Amino acid sequence: MESQGRSHQRHERIDIIAAWSQSGILEERRRLPIEEQFAERVARTQSRFFVPLPMNYSDDLWYNTQVSFLMEAFDALPRRPDIAFDSVWKVLEKSSGAWLPARANGRVNITEALGNLSAEPLLSGPIAETVLGNVPSQTCAFLFKRLVTREPAASSDKARQRLLQGYGAGDPLPAELKGFLTLVEGKYADPAPETARRGAMLLRRALSGDTLDIAGTLVTLSFPARLRILLCGLLYTARNERFHGESFSPFYSSAATIKTYTHPHYLFLAAYALMHLTWVHSGRSHALALDAIEENTVTNFLEARKVYAHHWTG
Picture 1 (tube, rainbow, N blue to C red):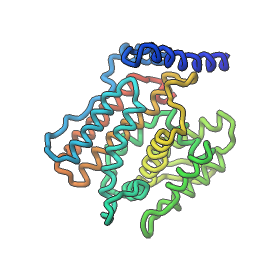
Picture 2: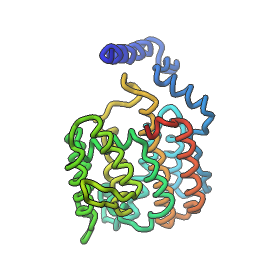
Picture 3: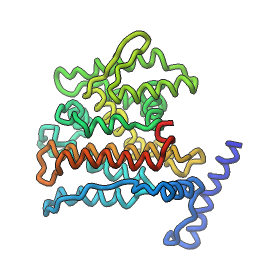
Picture 4: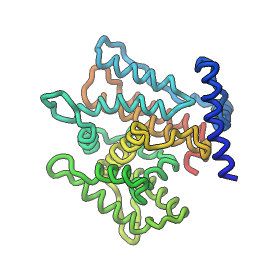
């Protein structure tokens, strides 16, 4: 039955392109079944889906460039939260460069920038904790595969390397994260689906800052360690896989469900909140007030969870 569904979806994708080859792409294509289900769900729940913060006016060119990418992200919603994530990631990437010393050629190494940013104590507080405390189960499963069962191998190796390398002298996070991952692997590396599910849920608790008992060892990840997992292990890995064409475009898959939407939606919300947080702490004149960002972050996660209900954590 599953193979029949996959075969049908493959034909559906090709048939849509064939129709476009006759009419051109100005004619809106027919929606795939999961896209219809999602549109109906959004309408039925009467959620606002996402509420952007009002922006300050400025003639600054850098700022207006970033606003253009935010507009691009918002235009992709609600149908394509994955594309919205791609666009807001560009703003977060540019904003992260403030945590690196200026280089002569003006270029920023994003891996180093995110590594340094994750160790920044200024970012701790309610906004980051809201992001870290609302990870959906689909995202936990993605993270568990990349960091614990090491699937797919190439992407996993790069993600773990970003977590376990040091950023600056005396960086304590590689040792903390290596110890944590070693414990998790020791208990949850069994490929059985139920073991993987429990391991993924453990990652959710770890990102929330809970104290965990892993095979008799009590572990509480520090805030910088949790933020590094989010920035370097999750967001950057997801971005790279999409940018380099290593992951299937999610909503054209025969395996797509309502739950599939939760992962890119979370990536988008996390990147959006962290982007505003970096603006505040890099002293940009157009930055908004922390309390407004905090309220908006809480609101957007409430709106998202209203849409997905049990699909977010189930």
